[in-house]
Length: 443
Ligand code: HEC
Ligand code: HEC
Image 1 (spheres, rainbow, N blue to C red):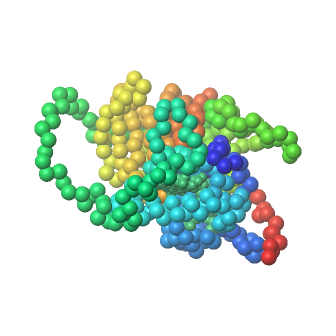
Image 2 (cartoon, helix red, strand yellow):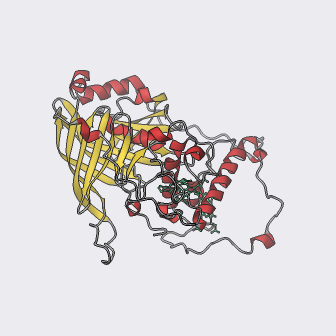
Image 3 (tube, protein in one colour):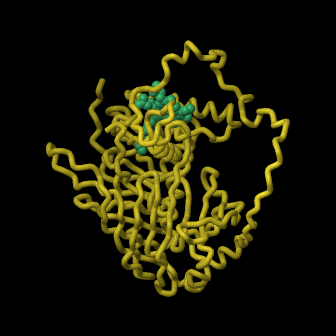
């Protein structure tokens, strides 16, 4: 299953509707600390069990990631699978995440150390270099530029000739190589002509948000809606129904349309899609815990932040509470519509910039762009909101388009009900399956 990418299980909006968490191919493997064979059963990686622990206090074979919070391990793993375009099984023996038997895992560990050493020295301890900087979604990082439409061969592409010609003086990386230490330009070039474009006058942050509130139907209408039940279809990569054991493998996932539902009862939310022959795939937030059902696990770190957004009745309304340095910084186009771009620095988790876009004419939210951040890097999730319609006095988007590294999807809601009763149990993480029977001691 090496370089093959699987349909990712889940997926958040604005993130919450697209954030993926898993390769379906490894559904059964549970992400938990691995107990030695015959030892006590592994402790499940729930947020509560991870809380207050470092990676090495919870997991068994941590070396490169020593010192980071245990809750940040899974987001980092999710990030590297995206950065390299692989599944977990590319580096891990399924079900034995602590095993160091695979060459790829050992290479990846060295790569983590190299990347961190580069950042800590040459890049002033900022996370400038990530796996993606070199890998660009492929397991084999390329050293030669690919021509358009070129299929890059899978053999290593390093030039064997290099040592013979190379300058061999440099073998270590030093802080004084930092771009910030490079001498400033001494001689200025010819002055650049001033830009002729008329400057756009941008509205204030307050203007943008009060116009948004008004466009949605006003404060009172927003406050009146305590729950929203969206029903419709999701256009996305759909895995084929499972095949019985011994039968030829099912065809690869293909774009298709499946039944979808999104329930929001702030701060709780849950989204589900039904794959033929596989039952619902769900992702939810119960007010504290963020979870997926297949595989059955809790989200932590940057992944949890994204799942939390499922509980927003109105997307991005709380942006100013969750971010600092909020600014309207540009006017852009989405399709043929003018939009104002609002940026802000996220307060919780790993510091990063989020962007949201408001239709300059209607005042409604047009798009959100956020990232799942891990210690090793981040990947983006973009959500475009369209087809706003009135639901009990509140404007609700009936089309939500997710663009994500993990596969795009479009939700088309045919019905949205405000204040329909939603049972709280809907938002609760389903009981995890019983742990696999303990393996007999191997040696
Ligand atoms: C490119 C290789 C690579 C991929 C892909 C990868 N991992 Fe890892 N994983 C590692 C390395 C390397 C470590 C050890 C890190 C260290 O030394 O601190 C690790 C450690 C772990 C651990 C800790 C195990 C223990 O008890 O010590 C877990 C759990 C884990 N990975 C889960 C996953 C999951 C789940 C996925 C898929 C979403 C995944 N990994 C994808 C390379 C990978
Ligand atoms: C400075 C560029 C660079 C960065 C940053 C980088 N890599 Fe690599 N990586 C490479 C190159 C080049 C190769 C190929 C070496 C070869 O084929 O001999 C490679 C190979 C690998 C391989 C082995 C692939 C295979 O199948 O042989 C893994 C796994 C890997 N990198 C993981 C990572 C991870 C995980 C990160 C981030 C923590 C990372 N790399 C960051 C350049 C980089």
